[in-house]
Amino acid sequence: MESIVLYPAPDRGHLISTVELAKLILSQKPSLTIHIIVINPPIKLGSTAPYISAVSATVPSIKFHHLPTVSMDPNSYPNSLAIMFDHFRLVNPHVADLLRSLYRDFTVRCLIIDLFCFPALEIASELNIPAYYFFTSGASCLAVFLHLPNLYETTSQNFNDLHTTFLNLPDFPPIPLSHMPVPILFRNNPECLYFIECAANLKKSAGIIVNSFESLEQKAVKLLSSSSSREGFCIPDSTVPPVYCIGPLTTTTSQTGANMHECMTWLDTQPSRSVVFLCFGSMGLLSKQQLQEIAFGLERSQQRFLWVVRNPPSDNQSKDPMNQPDPDLDLVLPSGFLDRTSSRGLVVKSWAPQVTVLSHISIGGFVTHCGWNSVLESILAGVPMVAWPLYAEQKLNKAFLVEELKLALPMNSEPERGELVSAAEVEKRVIELMDSEEGDSVRKRVVKKRDEAIAALSHGGSSRVALAKLAESWVRN
Ligand code: UDP
Image (cartoon, rainbow, N blue to C red; front, side, top):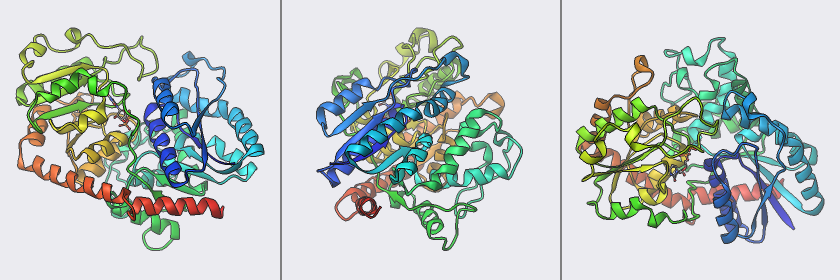
């Protein structure tokens, strides 16, 4: 029997797109038994158990393998990222045990790992198993990441302070280095060093699978392929393995009870394309002051809205930003806001079934934190965006979406007020998105990209061709 092992990061966003990749591979090679290794960390990053149960029940050929837990004291780490990164090192001997035992009983065609799981590369190399990456963000972001180790060497300053030094990749928008991914903004943090190591290891793989499609990111795809063949403009000092854009992959496992969620019945009562949806991913926590600015901005905009509100961060909360208690809306929102806006707005606590919401006919716009899954989900639903990045690589995604692809309007923050976005900015952007010529042009471009995405995934489309090439490379290896 053959197997392919996928090794995702333990958070929901990375896990879901990796499982979708597994489903896609299965559709290509139905005879394969695919083993998915799911890390079972001592500190969970959000609840993944219901999702895993749903997949196991519907796609039995995908097997989840729970690794034994390792001994870690969460209190000795500064944040959830530090926990996750150290966890990958500590758990690696268990990954080695698993791969060795699989290797005895199966033909292991390849190992496909997440960006953060590079310690597993060594084991793959020892067992002579070809190792690929599954890059869960876009091709433009991948090009920047491949360039990061080199960029890191060119300065001794923190990227966080480099507001007027710009990324200089051929055909890329001039992105200030202070907009690099959050973990690397301060160079002496252990998380920064781990992240740079993650980026440096990308080029040691047999290939990089990207959750994107060629016509979405043409310039980046061209740069990556010319860097791979070393012809034309190349990413400086980086050899790039073959890149396979096989997306967009978004969840196809139905969200339990999604259609029953109170927000769906409320959306049913709203006019077509009239509602702006605000949702900030699985980790986006906004301060009480920021929530109040949003509330005032929405109220003054007079637009219909559906807003997912999460508890503001506080010092005594758990380190897992995905596992927070529901907010007390009367405490975090301005007094009387819910009553004053009840005829045209709905606030839901903590979580909404985003994919189902975005595909509802009443949704006309999306204020998003620019997590890559959210971006792809919005494109596939043909919904224009306002880009409000919060963490991870989201400022890069915003630059590509706003400056390069023009699929989103910017939401500008005020650095002198701790990156606060004012009520006036929220009001302005929401009106621009929902009720202006500019917003309409963005919507038309997104709809065009949605059609291109569907074509890429169809028979003979670029993503299907890339998948076939990927499968061929496994046979060759
Ligand atoms: N999501 C959701 N409801 C919410 C918040 C998030 O269904 O209230 C889903 C969203 O549809 C997406 C994922 O969680 O699939 C978030 O992934 P993304 O890459 O956008 O951001 P991350 O949470 O990883 O920063």
